[in-house]
Image (cartoon, rainbow, N blue to C red; front, top):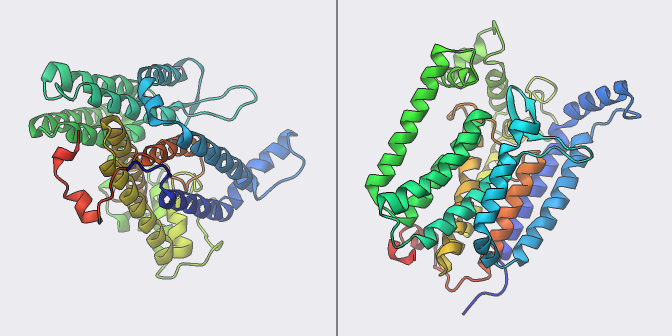
Length: 405
């Protein structure tokens, strides 16, 4: 029998993460809020300094995100299937607009600033648009997906034209998220190992080429990629103990200090030292480091547990719906959330090279949160069509591939 209600367990998990994120932003953004409002006071655009500038903006983003999640959960998933091509084309054009009207930040054009509106990062919405398009493609071409010219090449053409824009922004963090997600989706759609290995080999060749160009020409726009990979292979103890002669590994040093200073119980909520100007971008990419510094064992255990539960519910939804488009899209959205969370945590633990990737539902960032909430809303809409429920996680993970229609 069709399931008419949404997956309330998933709703509580997402809201729990969002609330946890707001609580942590109230702590980690105090110094950053004071700095940015001090500049605004000096410029005459604000009357007095504030310690809660980013918290208030985050609350606004959360309220907007929850509203969008509710709206998307009430839209039948067939709507996204019907307009998959339109959503993809519009999102691709929007992403390409950064080269014309985009704002440069840290050497990359990621943002669009429109008068009277918050800054928008188009790639965040391109992520969900690409997943919708790929799910649509896999359903329409499932009979010929194994064919090189009808399946493999067209599938990765859609991926490639998105990656092309990301390369020239440059935004390798988003590529690092989307690459494993798109390969995993193709593996589910057609599990021919030859094609999967081919895609992985192409990705490795491309990554090696980028690294090589960065080494030969370090002043180019890909030079920072090679630098980050080199820093990644350095010994963590050496990074922390050696006095910096430049700023190349400053950020890495500070987040390692933050994680290492928490001990078992942490310094206590609100008592982080690194958030006071030592660790840049603390409310964005490195909020996990301060969570560990303040809460340590309790903080990261809660985060990991909640992400694992979200993965369980997401894969359960994908396992339990019969429509191929819904199945592929649910798998894609869930994998996207898990890959992005794993990369962010991996960066903070120095097991993944430095990338500008936010921690889903926890980090500050309007575009990232809104796109994730759209994804969750679609996932909740799909959950209304669950037809059966596997008994446990093992049943999902070891399910035969014939259930993927």
